[in-house]
Amino acid sequence: MIALQLTPEKIFKEVTAFNTKLAEGIVALRAVGDLPSGVTPKEEVYSEDKVKLYHYKNPTGKKPTNKTPLLISYALVNRPYMADLQENRSMIRGLLDAGQDVYLIDWGYPDRSDRFLTLDDYINGYLDRCIDAICARHGIDAVNLLGICQGGAFSLCYTALHPEKIENLVTMVTPVDFQTGDNMLAHWIRNVDVDLLVDTLGNVSGDLMNWTFLNMKPYRMMGQKYIDMVEILDNPQQVNNFMHMEKWIFDSPDQAGEAYRQFINDFYKYNKLIAGEVEIGGRKVNLKDIKVPVLNIYAQDDHLVPPSASKPLKKYVGTKDYTELSFKGGHIGIYVSSSAQREVPPSIGKWLNKRS
Image (cartoon, rainbow, N blue to C red; front, side, top):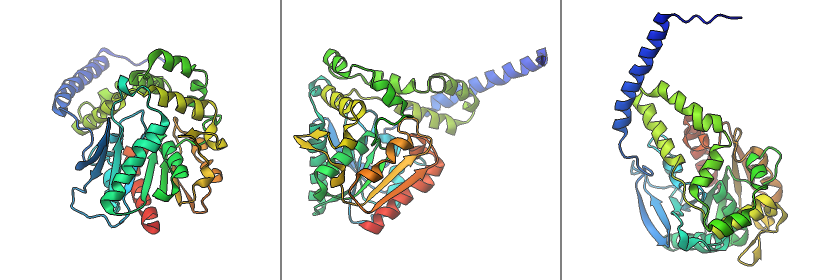
């Protein structure tokens, strides 16, 4: 047995150091102030219901070199400013620096009036009309499309249904095969009576969704990170980074009931996307109809969308120009880590510039 070497002097020093950090942390936390929802200058160029389409401007004044605009389609379940979290942690700024002309769809916060919105409304409705608005602004027929997570699944469906409007497709941490053995989220959701859930609640609470995601790593996400936070309380920059992330994590929109019902049933429960059986607006989605160049980016340590769920895309799409990019990190790190800032946006920009 190893005896613990605890002396009154050692305990006193540790308690004193802990209290000092807490005192300094209070000052650092007060200095954080209100946190923005994105940091890069942007203008609203189109809106419809809760949905807004934003156009970004490079704060350095650098003009886009790629004449084909890039539209980012984010997931419904989180807010899209994760792609523009802070000045030094912004995928959008990285894309602007890589010469892209960047647009982004903000799906907004659904309320009870949106309960009956369907995937058809989101994909053939809002997404399609945002693309039409961009094309009209630039006098073009097609855009580049970057789909992230669930927004990537939407982008796959859209490109298969409207191939004439997409020049190049980029998918990032996007599930394709929703029933791989290591997909914990898929195992959980297949045991939920989604029809009863939606029939009872109408819209699905963002807090409920957030609770689900946090419980995939409960010790880390709801305990250890707050213990670890004490260690950074004397570092204002790290405190600022931590609070930006906390704001985003708990800024969770409700989910429109019918769209949620269809997405969970068709994609997670019955894995219809790879079977060509997802029906949007009366038409079947066949991934073989995607003939445009595809860049598929996945994160090696992703616990929400494991690589095994993303990599099957290669064998289901109809394009001969297919590229994979593997990032050594997780589902969130692919947006905000320093290595991601160095690797991911420049790689996307280089790939798009070569093909546009």
